Image (cartoon, rainbow, N blue to C red; front, side):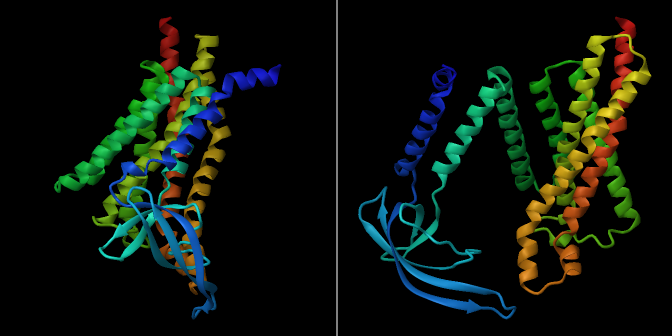
Length: 362
């Protein structure tokens, strides 16, 4: 009976995922660029290759027969790839691809058509969020994600179009607005939202001030802003903007947890002394501080792994990699960790102060 109840309650989810997958696999008519599906793969040649560093790979050339989905006919394309698939790709029968046509028989694969997979994952994420987070809370969370994405997009457009805009000022304003919007939609308008927002902004600001002061005193010695990838503006200001958003996100998570715990204590007994709130805030902060710092470090390591392996494979030593590849990531992780540490006393102090005053007035 329980199994049947679960099937009746959540049986729509597999059906929805199936409909999404099938629908996006057959949406080629919506594309202006040629879209095709690989119907045959013929291997033409294989050969082992070795570079000057001793890295071994296998080079493969193949002929793809592709059926056009939003055009008539078929085309054949010769594709070369390495088994490592670092900068080349191997296509299989059933893959859908987006093509480019330079005229005549000059067809090339532009990229894989991934909308079916991505769309299905998005639908799964939204569905699970609404199921386990309840409809109202999940809806507001999705709304905050959408609005924050829109704010970030507007900031990017403003940065690109308005040449005289201050990048740091622009993204700092956007980050503060995103935090306020997120907390308002998740917590609602009230004292809890206000204290959490104030603690987040203050802790982030203190961490950034420490970073700026330290970099100024050391004249940025050992910090290579020029190693940022694909930078078309002053890299230093872009790094500051990137750090602001990263630190604020980590700090907001911690501040929310501490303030939620303090407000729970206040609901149980509104007449607690300052010391109780302060000690409780410190205790909650210490419990989650280590986890959050480790999460930041793991995210940094995960982002860095591909480039580190590539650099090691090409004969670079660890000192060079730390200096040129991991330099800014380590700095950003340290600053974010500093913001997390500072958020504990700052949030506990603000929460205790306002809740004691609120208890005296009740």
